Image 1 (tube, rainbow, N blue to C red):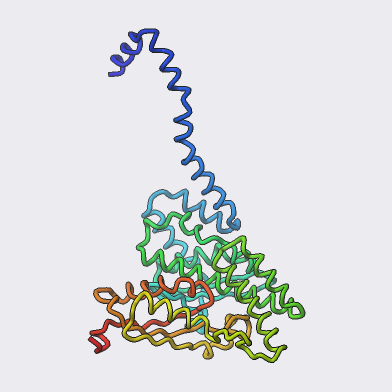
Image 2 (cartoon, rainbow, N blue to C red):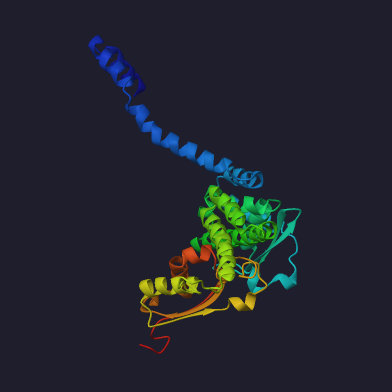
Length: 340
């Protein structure tokens, strides 16, 4: 075949040469290449924004093209987790929305956070170990700024089920939330004489993870508002008629609109966690951090418990990013609740 093509090429009249060169000079091929070049540059930029510890992990996993090999690599990382203290297996440290049970703790040493984690699943231990290794030794503000898309850069989607991928994201979100709490405690301690400076510092995180940054700004702004309310004697809810339970109110509106429930009960258990860093005593928002939600809806028909919970998590995604730390769900169909 190659000889035939060569022969045809030699047999072409000279008049065909100019059009051939003209096509070669056309800008179309260059234009067609631009989108792919743009995508590659964007990915590289996102990758270079990562702390060195996380970038090393991303590079290591990207160098392993086989999904099964990546799976085995995760199991290897699971063996590198340090022993987890038994007393730390608490609801406070438990990651919500994971197929397996996972717990994470944070310890601040010399301005850096050091993580520990544990799980009842070896594969989930491996995922936790990645985050422990990648986020340990970083300042709280550095952790809050880490973009969640670094998880996609690891290239683990093909090696994990959707529920495992979702659980991995939830681990990361909880660790960012704990880092944010520590950051806000630091700001509360250093800016007690000037609450507005805590707000400015929290807004300084806006260059990083959006959800966490907005939470920090909202928390510190709330602290300043509470102090002002106390000075003018208007009380905790202020004189403007603002609700004292804005988080629960928002959850109720969204769940009612999306699920059209026959029964909806939202119980605020935050007072049981008054010592937690995210409670109002330490942060400045309304103190609504821990909830139990019981909902009866026809939308749950034909869905497994995991899918029902995933549906609710999706509806309350904004609240779960911040300030809600823990959400216990009871989801029933009308038939299951005896309301059919």
